[in-house]
Length: 424
Image 1 (cartoon, rainbow, N blue to C red):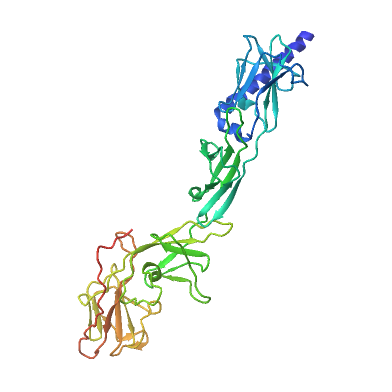
Image 2 (cartoon, helix red, strand yellow):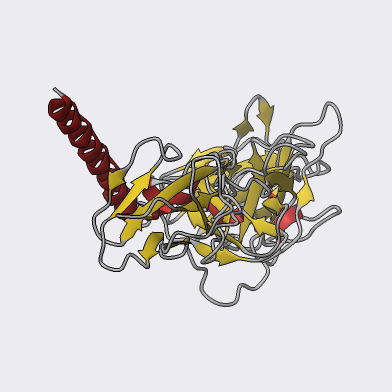
């Protein structure tokens, strides 16, 4: 019966050893996870002759933990078998070889491993300390993006995700801007040395920045719409500083393209001043607790100059545009002689044919001598490029006679356009 009992104990011990070995292989396969609960250590081996003593030095074994190699090395065995106890000498298991996988025995609390050589009562004790938890990482939102404030500024490393390689980082702050387009998880810890266990992993989830605002362009009245006063900002793509979009109470939330592209802070004559081509960036502003949104890019193509009397003619009460079509639409409006041209208020009528268009009436009003006709190339989508064009500058024609004579157009000279407009 005693032999049978011994056999059971030995078999159980071997089974436990195989479990540990399996854990060691697992730890070796994914060593980056070993330090998920790591902290500062004061490792080393002491010796003792009983489970409650660690003061004698009779054991001939030397046991050393190497936290960089992640190994436990046993030496001084003299070719004899070595046994290990994980319960302070209550039970002992035979270990194979002289090197163990450290990952198998690292715990979140202090751990002691006992080792003894066959034929000796004395044993060596290896102390594996609990995790160090001195490192903290606080996420802070700034106007330029997020950052982490680290409580430890030297001997730190981080990795991207949970399986990336560890990268040394020695600074008090860590910029998270590059991770904010998609959101990401970063992990930080204090670095291990040969004699010091790596610190507890600190995981930080970097939030994805808010979606870019939905903005639309009115290519006829020449403004951006969809902006919210006080909470959105804009800039040229070539600029560094942002301007907060702001309108007075009761005003329409519209951003004049001339204000941005032509830097026109005051009144600008939109019948003679060409709108510049450019790219405008718009985003929702950052707050104390929330990142600025992703940036919406809006491309504004170059505005074309006004048509000329080579293509636009007014004969008596008939307006003829020689190259008008559905793919190249024009439009016109008629104002009284003393009526100011306000691009946001005028009403346009489309012309998509080369046939003559009567201008006797515009809406319910009769056209009279002295009236002013404005004609421009309408905003339209280019079927080849898919780009939407900006309405051109208007050609100005003063009506001088409608009975039986040809009105001689008075054309306001258009600004000279240099270079070839590009599209994006």
